[in-house]
Image (cartoon, rainbow, N blue to C red; front, side):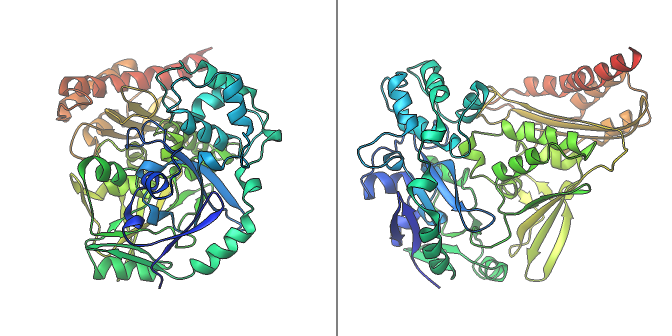
Length: 494
């Protein structure tokens, strides 16, 4: 067992223990190391001014893959075994990299406070490609906010970059020597104590279960995208934290014709990437369902949030407006829970017993999410919806999933889940019963929306009023009909 977290920051080895291990990475960079290029503004993971690159071993274990994350909501100790690159480390000393030079040439900065975050996030995009389209730039920078430039010169700067002439993080900081040190140091589990607080990072599931059962309650720290905000804004200081990132194999995402399997530490970005890599595979109609999920993941949050947050964390957080839950509900997903007594599988539709109340024993950990995919030859339609004040980087006001199995124009089975209308995501059995066995018509979906409105009891809060959510619940069935069913009818009739 060891009591120091190991990080490489701009290629230099750092071993962190005590109070510093519980600090946010942004504070550690600025106030301990004096690297003030990383800016702190929102401390919520919203603005992107604190963006850094975090490199983790790829699937081969021979290279570090770098992704952009918000350092303001990452705890130093959870980054054990990683390589961090800040804006100061994007180029050799006294030089600018291609992104920085383009920002200068295209006048991409005014006040400059957001600029380091933009530069790092943009550099992350060029880690895997030489040129970007305008849409790729806009999508890749949704996690970075600027109140001065109007974004046009920043976008022009990104389009002007020739990535083939740019030294990437893996070029500046060769992976092999860092991976050798990380492998030797992180072979053993990590336990850091400071005062009444403890941070653990086991390297086996057995160790994790032991910590979870012997020292409960333990908060599992994965992406930290929610915990970091609560720590910064509400002063949350959990006495016991555990990171599972050191457990090998728990981050796997597998897709075949029958099942989507997502490991407990797999990030949302890894899930999205796996789905898009399978875009050319013939999993019809599963392919369409996964494409719907990828589209929702694309507006789940910023790239920085998706690069840190996990599907298991989104489930365990238990929010009734969690973006992934309606999909999991209508797909009849199952959760693999592992504890002292072994492994059990729980349907996600039975997992939530009330607001933030889970069918999860004190010693259990979500180790896999299993999503059955529809068989080849079945005729299905799936619609996933997120309503928020902003399209990108915003918490949902309302979410929904509608899944139909059909034969010709007859609905043979229906699954409906709504979020943001109760203390948990709700399946709508009365609406499903109304739809089943019926011929697809506009009137049927009008009645389904009206029934859904009567069946829910939403509250008013900062993201929307009760009446607003009631209307959304009714309207979503009209939207589904016109977007998913009416065009199909017109094509067939033509």
